[in-house]
Amino acid sequence: MRPLFLICTGLLLLALVDLPIGYYTLLRIVVTIGAVAIVVTEFENGINFWVIAFGLIAVLFNPLIPVYLGDKSAWMPIDLITAILFGIKSFTLKNNK
Image (cartoon, rainbow, N blue to C red; front, side, top):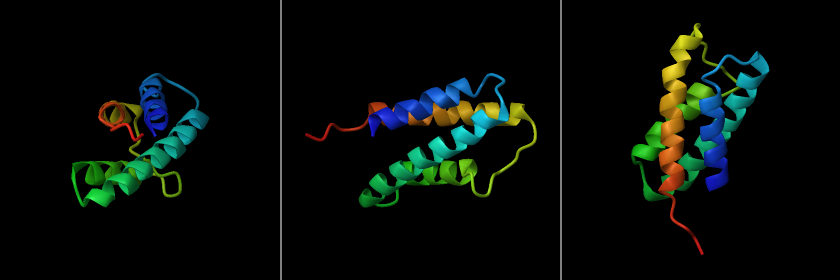
């Protein structure tokens, strides 16, 4: 799971620069998959911060019913905060051996 979360982090940070619209569609798909993966694994521990935060991220980034905030400047802080959350989550994962 850690590689998926790190990929999400990198893609979100890359989204801070101006890229073609196709990139943002890919970003929505990958981030939604990563967020849903966290929600599913964390839900076993009950409702907690991670379930709520990544549930909201999954809804916000979902590619099926996209949320349009209009201007790219509105998405930049969201992308940055989401990248930080994915980064924190990837480094706080416990190694299952």
